[in-house]
Image 1 (cartoon, rainbow, N blue to C red):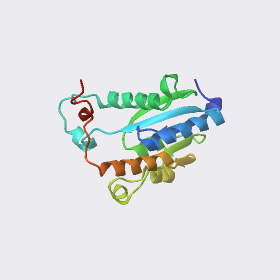
Image 2 (spheres, rainbow, N blue to C red; image 1 turned 45 degrees about the horizontal axis):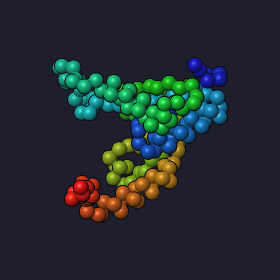
Image 3 (spheres, helix red, strand yellow; image 1 turned 120 degrees about the horizontal axis):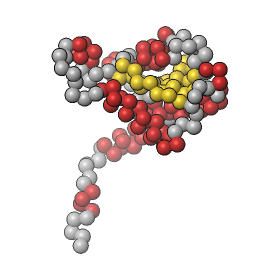
Image 4 (cartoon, rainbow, N blue to C red; image 1 turned 135 degrees about the horizontal axis):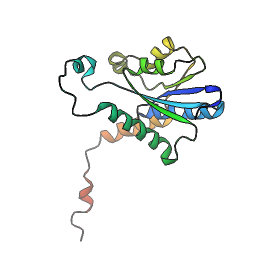
Length: 177
């Protein structure tokens, strides 16, 4: 089922907190403009494209199927069994996230929604910015969604807890009849 006039809201999903925030915003935008939601999950083989070219036998794991399962799990964890509440389709695209998203949002009437995520110095050096790539190359408007405030709370709580010694819950039940 297509949204009104074939309008689409394309969103990048990975299962991360940032992509879940972007996914919820994309659903809000799709509902607002009566558009179809297109959830895109990009994937690469674990050893990269170059390594896969030299593989003689087919891989033991169907990576595309695993990516499709992850996409469905992400939609389910974000919205439950009822789904997003707007017409939607999922795309599992082999490739790097930036090019895969730009290729998927290839219509002038599309809106590309992407999570901006946290970009510390090391991550910025190791991984190119998907948001920057999409803004530079997309043929449609790009909406970069900032991380949820809950993410900074989660990181802060994790930092505090990681300083404590590990705790084994079985200690609570030992010696109890």
